[in-house]
Image 1 (cartoon, helix red, strand yellow):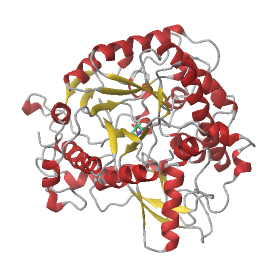
Image 2: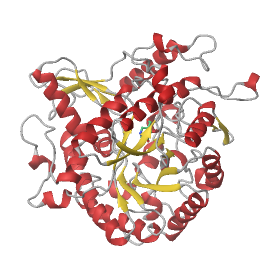
Image 3: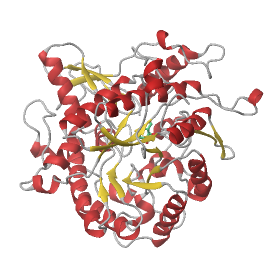
Image 4: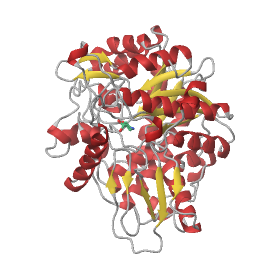
Amino acid sequence: MDRRQFAARSLAAAAGAMLYRHPGYAATPLSAEQVPGSVPDSLIEQARFPEGFLWGTATASYQVEGAWNEDGKGESIWDRFTHTTGKVRGGVTGDVACDQYHRYPQDIALAKQLNQKSQRFSISWPRIQPTGTGAPNMKGIDHYSRFVDALLEAGIRPWCTMYHWDLPQALEDRGGWPNRDLANYFADYAGILAKHLGDRITVWAPFNMPWAIAFMGYAAGAFPPCRTSFSDFLKAAHTLALAQGEAHRAVKAASPKATFGSAYEMAPAYPKTDSDDDRAAAARYHAMNNVFFLEAAMKGQYPKAFVGEPPYEVMGFKAGDEKLLYAPLDWVGFHYYTRRIVSDASKEQFRSGGNFSGTEIESNSPGGRDPYTRFRAAMPTEGPLTDAGLEVWPRGIYDLVTQISKDYNHPIIEITESGCGYLDGPDEEQNGRIPDGRRIQWYREVLAELARAIADGAKVRAYHAWTLLDNFQWGEGYTERYGLIYNDFRNQKRTIKDSGLWYGRVAASNRLNV
Ligand code: IFM
């Protein structure tokens, strides 16, 4: 992320904070009548979740584990990035993060105390294959084996993301995701995981947010390896889609119990105006940012994300790739944070991309976000902003879940991440209690809309709050707090926030007014 983008992010976060910095802000969100887009209390009171609904949280290896060079782990692209001066806010790294590599028994005990039934976590590829290929490092396998056993003992379903952004640096040195060979390397890695852990893990997803991996890393340059090439982005996206298919086959071959799904980023896209052009642009956004990899898996083809024909040649698409892309998912997993307003830019001269907003690239520049999709996607500010700068728009989860249900023939759905960044910390006058009322309100409203989608027929079986505990927030370092549990990074002391206690009661009762 460059300085200009940093400044924009900081301003957005500061503006969000200012909205609430009145006496008692931490415990007192604005009332429903004052907040555009908010959900009526009656919907929250009526909301019910089905018996057996899987309440959980999600985490990611680099964001929580620390132990960056222990037990034979290789260097990842995030190790390299954070060890490079000027890349991360505050000059911090994930070398220690939440030290979960050593403290996982305590974190699992906390999740159990909060009545959690599902834990989405990721495995660090360079712990398993330090240079990305070859025989597994058994110390890495043993660590995750112990971790999974501890979850099962706590009555928590282990839910594994095989890759949440920490590519072995050695594979980046071989060209990174634009290099098609990575699809097969990834499949080998997926097969190793399924062989060694597939007797106990039955829920697998290959990638967290594959669009972000390709776009942030290779087009926008906000994430490592910080390249800014649109053709590399397209190549990376194609390799990731091939890797999704190859991993599907490798996991199923190695573990008969395996079920295979996804953890896609999604934001419902609303056209800026009712014009045909804006509606077509919103459809392109949905195709590119929401369902690009889902269509590849379910149909063996890419959706209409581009103005004109897909740039197959630039992507490196070969005859027969349709068959390799095909990987019918057993269930569909996606995240919900916020929404987008999309307008057409295809009739203007393309100039450059837009600003990074934490989950993706905002673009209000002439000509659109990139030279292929030619739309402008903006996050509106009609609803309030979180401290992390994202608009609060609870209704979006209803629209997204019902659209995916309808378009994909009512699949089983898992919400793989959903949450909000607020900076509330311990209140010394209340014995260190953390009164994060705005986070409770965020979840109450989003979950009420999710319950409405379920009542209308969507087969949602799980919700994973992002995240169990405050962690390393990528380019933002430790300046954003998304956790249900507060972490004091000076001494690794965990304190359950009011929102965590509330979420625990929700998990125990399947209702929201608790
Ligand atoms: O922390 C991230 C996570 O790694 C991916 N999804 C968005 C979260 C909040 O920014």
